[in-house]
Image 1 (cartoon, rainbow, N blue to C red):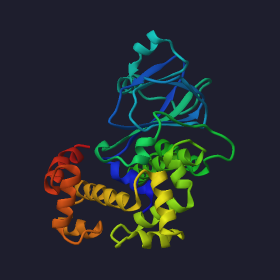
Image 2 (image 1 turned 30 degrees about the vertical axis):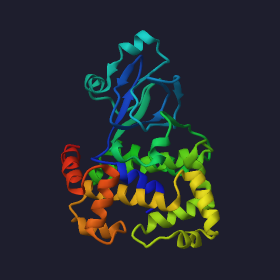
Image 3 (image 1 turned 60 degrees about the vertical axis):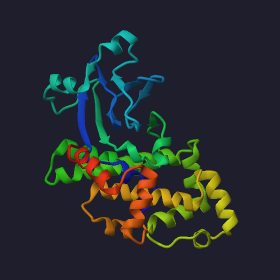
Length: 309
């Protein structure tokens, strides 16, 4: 796989959820802090997002906002004052109280997609950790075309409830998350990982490592894949990523092993081969040294958490 795909796969657990919301008039609802990531897509109209920490954000039609760290926030028809925010109706109760909505739009109406992803934060990739509290992707002509296509498809599926929607909607939600992260990295955002993904040497090395984790990688072999000298690779990779190539490889092998222990029933020998360790003992020793627990104990600890989502 690639860096973004692996970073998302490592933390995604359970199934994402979403609602298509239609509202008009004066309204204000609160979404509590969440052990995952939330998102909103404004399909029609406009509204305001007021994070627990940060400035109010005006959202217009076509805007997408991701809250990757599960920050509590309020969404409302206007930049409400502190007292109004304090009295905002909890989102789940707000949905229930509104009841069925008419299919036709009315003047001043706002239509949104609101959803959330369940994340396991115990093994976060630094790319995911670096995402800001609020990622705002405004609707601009010619920008984020893939994201716009995913939003259109998701909005259609949630509105139509056609055959196969139970498969299509979760898949489109996963695609939406990837496109939101990709759009954030591509919009000239400051930070380490947008720079990493935009650097030809570091990006080539990461692509090679993530596409074949079990390969017998060395600094020389990885430098050849990136088309530079070993010294150049070491300098640029370490400066941008914050780890040397081999240190990153070891860390990611063990992190991915943890993901496989959490998400699959594969025996330890199979997992060891997939992540580049010659024997289950070698993997177990390295895993215990890095995470302070054995692979078997880790699998037991995470089994209940994954099953409940």
